[in-house]
Length: 94
Image 1 (cartoon, rainbow, N blue to C red):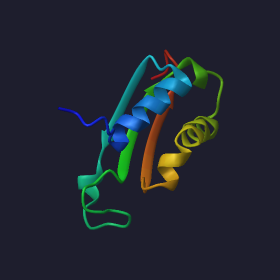
Image 2: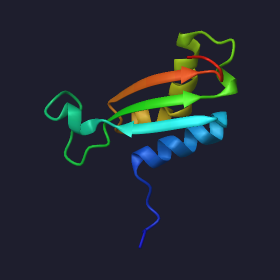
Image 3: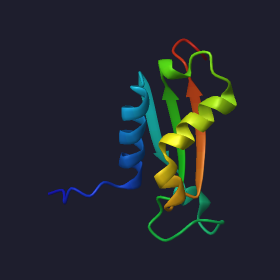
């Protein structure tokens, strides 16, 4: 039975869903790929890859899109997420 405590990946997905209402969202915990590297800690949840497609990114530069995602995840980035790789696209973009 769940204790109601969300892991970091779940919080990231929830915040991005609330902020952008994406048509597609994939949050991948890549922490184990970084074992022994800077920012890694036992238990993981330090390195994430986000793939998001949302209308909110239409007409925005890549830098602006990354800033939007980083702003939405400011608490996670300040509180334990060491690295965040972002692919942010508008619908219809490859």
